[in-house]
Amino acid sequence: MASTPYKRCIFLLVDGARADVVQQMMEAGELPSLKRHLLDLGSFRTAVTVFPSTTGPAHAPFLTGCTPGTCNIPGIRWFDRRQPHGWTHYHQSRSYVGPGSLYVDVDLDPGIRTIFEYFDRPAGIFSFLNRGLGISENRTLLSKSWYWFYAHYTGHWQAVDDAVWGYIRNAVTRGSDFVFAVLPAVDEYSHHTHPFSEVTFDSYRAIDRAFGQLTEELHRQDMLEDTLFVLSSDHGHSTTHTHFELWEYLNACGLKTLYYPKIMRNGCTAASMISGNGMAHVYLKKGDGWHGLPHWQEIREGQYGGTDLVEALLRMEAVDIVAARDKDNGVVVASSSGTAEIRQQSDMILYQPIDGDPFGYPPVVPCATADELLEVTFDSEYPDAPYQLLRLFDSPRAGDLVISARPGYDLRMLHEYPEHKSSHGSLHREHMHVPLLTNEEIARPYVRTTDVFPSMLEWMGKLPLDPVDGQSFVSPLQAEGVNA
Ligand SMILES: [Zn+2]
Image (cartoon, rainbow, N blue to C red; front, side, top):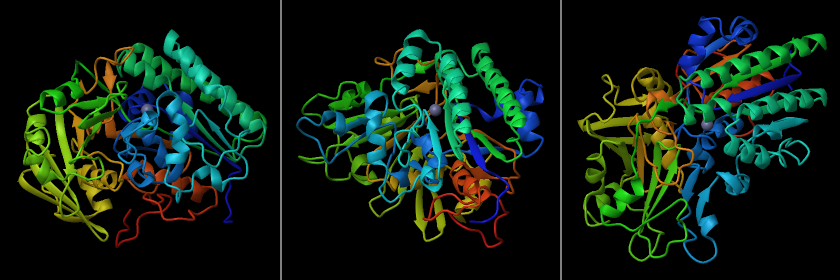
């Protein structure tokens, strides 16, 4: 093992934290402990998360170094076209919300090693993925459901965050060398109010206070200097003014749609699986079964529902982006601004607008490495979108149509309680930009959340044992470029 000054790493996932809010609150002196112990000693970056930018799948890059597509966990809900019949409805229509979360570790691609498997005494606190944690190391195995149930019905999500800090202290006391902790309050208060409400800001301030107390305790025990801290988020948030009922519209387009929670319906010809609620996988029944993978050209020819579904969806104000598999590999993506093809050719990504540009990018090199593409699209409305779509469609579990909602809209109305007044999940910058703070030096200006995993390992004196999508930002990129 390489030498490292660190004896432990504490990773804090502030679910739903916006990069701009963290930056502005730090500049305003409202997050003094995070500034003092992270920013002043190390780095702050706005990073790009993964698509779908949703709780759960967007936690995976920190734990695996891989996108949800590579992990084969393409959404917080997805449809398993391999098991369309019988008593398997809950397995067929995955939802990692509630008891369905037990499937996550089984669904994760078996070839992927989690970060827990690299450490001797890891600890997971409200973690989405738990592979590699023993029963005693998954500190919230038994209590998570109770906390979520309590907070869901009382609205008191701050109590869950408060409990997290107790679990962290306990893990450190027991000698944990890697602690992964999820703080849900910012996300939940954003959903129930909006991302810039006072109650949401209060939950950021509470994190800063608790972090300050933790650092004081570590200092007293002479453990502060050898602790690596990393804080990040899985997605941003944007205010939602209109709910668009996607399944209802698909039915109006001539389909019979299965959706959550109505997953017991028989004779369906489509399935709509929403994440975030700003993103959806739509699965289309091809002929008599679900095994075929309808491609862009077939869908546009009206073979499903008797209409051009892409055109029909893009007529809706709520629908911003529609993407599907191309018949010759690759992905086709469209918005009201145009259509483009995206392909992977060895280490290069080809992005070729056909008519207009669906993402309205500044002139983009048609053939670029993943890193070049990240840099040139970083400040656009759709950072990293071509790369993210390619990786998502790598998953055989991805939908036949992938829909990204326009900011201000989401794709689910009837069965969401309490009503979501803010959403995420989409390809838009407001959802894709996240904060990244650490007491170490980040050597690159443009980073993805997939890069955090190999970087944390390197700082802790370890190297990934398998190829991952991300690449360490501990050192600058090599001149010739390296691809994810
Ligand atoms: Zn989240």
